[in-house]
Length: 264
Image 1 (spheres, rainbow, N blue to C red):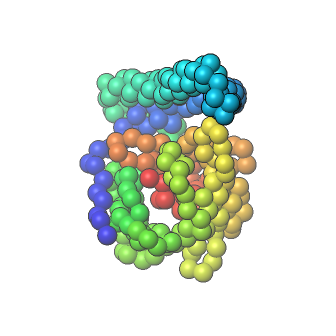
Image 2 (tube, one colour; image 1 turned 30 degrees about the vertical axis):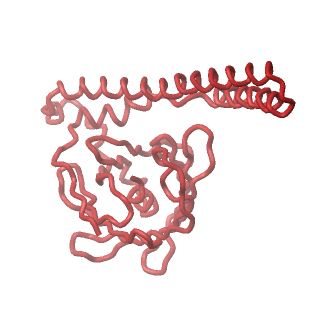
């Protein structure tokens, strides 16, 4: 089992505000309508190419081949271009954040928007790693361990006492952010089930549903936004080679923690 340590870097108050409030406004996924239109064009071009090959028609084969190559290039430009644009926007926003001193967090006249929030952080990791989950000051809140080929994630407190266990009920083969979460998870405290997590199929960004118990609540997580009964209560974002869970304290639930520690 590999030990994974956190980079010694604290998230400043301004960086936190950028990640929580600004990122969702300046980054946008490719529109669903565009994806559908692109898929239709690809199918039509593929049909022309297949017809040319099946009928041994040189003209259709040539047109289909050229069109297929062209639509592939266009797709790469559009989809990769959108991802690159989002990345550039985020880097620019973070560059501005680094020029603002963290002293603003100590100015009494400025209300703290995160006064009632909980911030947890864990490093990027792989199944089978042992890693810490800390607060923003680097204080260890949990240790997490898992077996590379096993179905369980174990969450322990700093005294090595197990507080939660997450069971993988169905794995995942997706490699997108958030999509590498197993398709189905169950969260337990001893033998008591505290919640179930299900990743739904989506053509744009992964949609994760968390059915929490005791108290009962339904959470939806998409593009890093955490909604409880359609109200935004927190976000999950990536920075400094780590993932952050930034959520209202009153909305925090063990099932959300179980989801967060499985995200890589």
